[in-house]
Length: 159
Image (cartoon, rainbow, N blue to C red; front, side, top):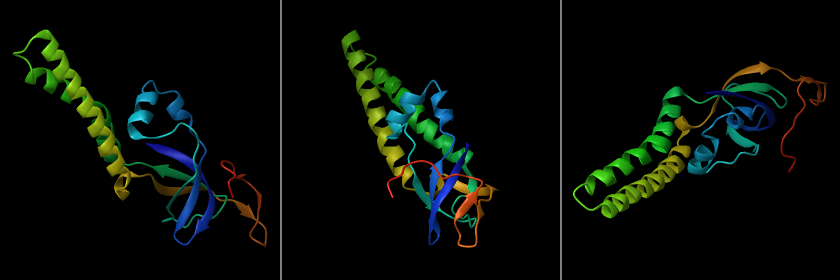
């Protein structure tokens, strides 16, 4: 999964990134479930990330989430709750219809809670976060280092 972002600020070896292409979530049918289970938000939020490629304020950069990380997140968010729903149902297989339904419901709730916990923990690991891959477009600056043309910084103005 790749995205584009503008570098708003650089401090030390980290950069403040403003995502510029948040529309891919809007076209996804699973958007609400994904955002709910991952604890995410559908509004644009600036975020700090390691500046491993030496980007400068105003640069347009490509961000990427590794495929293996994306698949792990998808599996924990969607497949785990469904698996535990069936496991709860099968555990109560010899019971009445009500007991089987309660078993399936308990499995689903356990799966949702587990998905939330797993996603929160994965979000703290470096390999499961977006990484800057390359600079797509450098900002033009004047002699004082101010951006004169090219990318306009946008996003949250809470400076």
